[in-house]
Length: 166
Ligand SMILES: [Zn+2]
Image (tube, rainbow, N blue to C red):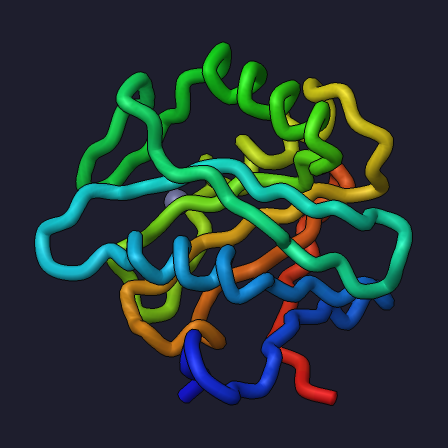
C-alpha cells in the first residue's frame, strides 16, 4: 500500500507506449485522496496542472476540486466549461499548465466509460495547448493510490499507464 504521508516511495505511472512518466506531488495526491468515492458520495472531478512539461517525468503539481457550477451525481460528473476555462487561464498566469482532467469512480479498479474516453479525446482536439498528449485520471474508491486509473491520449488513441517504481 502506498501511503500519502510519511516516508512513502514516490509513485509514478508509465505507459508502455511512451517514455513519459506521470507522478503526483504530495499535495495533489492528498487532495485527490480526499475525494475518493466511498459510500454514497457523488462523483467528483477537476483539472490537472503541471509546472514542467518538457521532461520525461511530468509531475501533476496541483489539481482543482469540484466547483458549485459542476453537475455531480453518483455516476456522472459534468464540469462547467466556462468556469474550467477561467481556472485554466488563472493557473497559466501563475506558471501552471493544464494537462488533463480527473474524476472519481465508485469502483475499486476504475474502468473508463466510453464517454470518459470520448470526452478526453475531444478536449485534446478542442482546447488550446501545445501538448502531445493529455492525461486522464480516474480515482479509485480504494485508498491505495496505485489503483488510480491513468491514461495518456494523443486525441486518437488512449494509452493506459501502470504504476512504475524505479
Ligand atoms: Zn468516468
